[in-house]
Image (cartoon, rainbow, N blue to C red; front, side):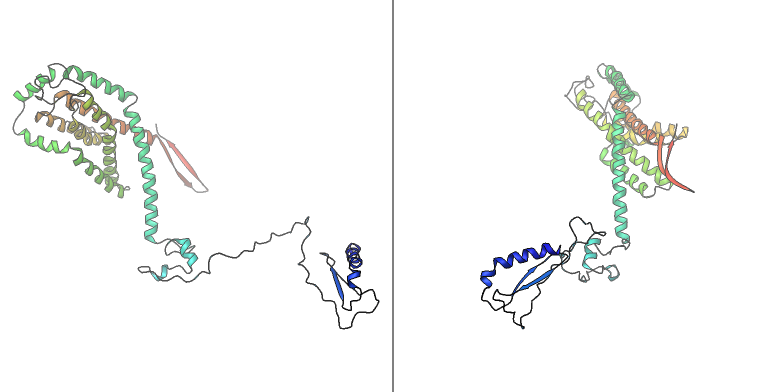
Amino acid sequence: MRLRTILPALLLTLATSSWCRGQDRLQTVAAVDPEHPVMITFVPFDGEPPPTAAQPVPLPLPPKTLPPTTTPSTPLAPSFTPLMPPAQEPQEQPGMPRSLMPRTTADLVMSGYGVGPGQPLPAWQAWCDKSWNGLCDFSSDEFHKVVCDFKHMYWGKNLVCMGVALAAAAPLANTHADQGIRDWYVERLKTSSGDGWASVAYQMGKHFNVIPVYAIVGGVGLMFPDTWVGSTAFTWGERSLRSLLVGVPAVGILQVGLGGSRPNENGPHSSYWHPLHDNNSVSGHAFVGSIPFLVAASMTENPWMKGAFFLGSFFVPWARVQQDAHYFSQVALGWTFGFLAAQSVLQTDIENRRVLVAPLDVPGTQGIGVMFRY
C-alpha cells in the first residue's frame, strides 16, 4: 500500500523537475491514501539542502471513511436542517383556559386546539367526536334498513299482495259498486256528529303534520335507549318514518297512474280508472293515517292492544268516506299500502334480530360472540 502511494509522487517529481530547477523554495507534494497518508518533501536538482526555516505544511486530511464493501453495524442518523423556526410559546387565546394551552407551537399544531400530545381531550371535544361517530354509524344502519324495506315491499309476497289488492279494487272502482257504497253510506250511516271526529282524523292524515311528530318522538327516545319508554318511543317513530318512506312511491305512482277522481267530480262514474286523468285513485290520507296504528300493533304481543291498534288504523280511512272525499276502493287501497309498508319494515327488523354480533368478554378470553335466533 505504501509503495502504491509513493510511486505517483516520484513520477510527479520527475515531471516537475524542469520547473523546480534553480528554485530555492521548498516543493511539497502530498499523496494521500485513506488509510496511509504520506507527506513527501523534495528539493531542487542543484543538490542544495532546503532552507531550515521551511517546514512541510501538512495538508488537511479528509475524514476517515469506511470501505465501500463494509456495512456499518449501526445505521447513521440523517442530518438535515429543519425548515420550520424553533418552537415558541404560543400566545394565550381568548376564551381558552391557560391549563389547556399547549406548551409549544408544535403541540398546538399537532393537537388542533388546546391539547398537547398525550393529554386527554376536553369534554366537549370528546362529546363531539363520540356524537359524530354515533351519527355515522346510525346513518349507515338506517340506510341499510331502508334498502331492505324496499326489497321486502317491492319484491316477494308483499308485491303479490299489492297485485291482489289492485285486482280486488278494480271491479269496485270501474263499476257502479263504489258509487253504490258511497250512496248507501251517505243515506243511512252519515251523521253530523261524525263530522267533528272526521276533521280530527283529517289532520292526522296530513304527512306534514305527522312527520315532525315521528321525528321528535324518535329523537327523544334515542336519547334514552336504555329505558323501556325511550326504546319504545324510538322504535315507533323510526318505524313510522320508514313505513312512510317505503310506501310513498307506490301510492304516488298509482294515484296518477290509475287516474280515478273524487265522488261527484266527474258524475256518477268518477271512481272509474282513467290513467293520468286525475290523482285520487288511492287515498293518501288513508295511507298516512293508518301507519302509526299499524306500526304500534306490530310492536306489541298483547292481543287486546294489538286489536285496539288495528281497529284504530281504520279511523282516518273512515273519515275520508265520512267527508265524502274518497270512494271505498280508494281508501281501501290507501290502508292496504300502509299495512304492507308496516309489514315490510317489521320484516326487516325481524331479520336483523336473527343474527346478533356483539363483543365477548369472559374471564380468561376475549372475542366476538354471534347469536342466532330462530
